[in-house]
Length: 334
Ligand SMILES: [Zn+2]
Ligand SMILES: [Zn+2]
Image (tube, rainbow, N blue to C red; front, side):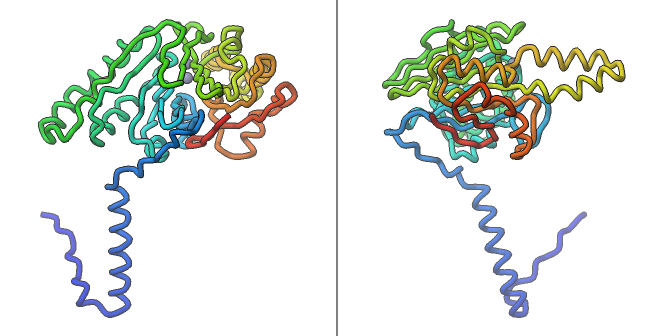
């Protein structure tokens, strides 16, 4: 049998050790209560306009600094998620968001939905006892039903163990599928779904949020194309996916040099359906966009000023407004 050492009673320690033990105790207590505390729920200002928190700015390739597609859009004190990518629950928790008013899906590449189960489970543990509205283009029901089917046993165990203290309704979202057009109009907020170009992924859409005279657009995954430009037209803030083509020159040259056709084609196919930075800058300027925030960064660069400067190199030759390179947890507003 293994036995851990018995801690000495504090009274038996000499004075310096006693102080040390007390300090250690306090430290552990702080860490413990922090880990146990409900995340400090953040209060959003009901009188505020539109803003967003970039919760996941990466792509499927693993990058410890970037989760995958997940953006919180905040309208007054209402919070919506556009996509729920890998590990999004962590930046969501760090942002102090412990419940949302709805989820919007742009398309069903797994890097855009795989984090939903973790988010809903956290809501269940947190006692959010209501069904969250989930909206998306066709495919939403299949994806969400399939994902939550994998949680059936987990849900059964939690209800058996915790009874109705576990908020089971959170694990049963209200999923609806929509065609492009207005998908939500409520208390001065209008959300419009528009088609984008991410072939062969069909449907693929972006969302346009209009609230208190401001327009915030989230692109979803798309190359630059007229439908995307139309959806983004006149946005005060465009949160766009982005691909820096020049950064792929070296990997392409290497793959070519060693005759790795598979890798070469994988890179080129990946590049074909994302928004190349210079084309995006031109489109944003022509479409009357005021401000750009880049997310879904391809390649998945390190969150450093040097890498970010390289990523947007040349964009301001075409686009007059501010260009923000997203990092996980970053807040952006029109
Ligand atoms: Zn993606
Ligand atoms: Zn995609």
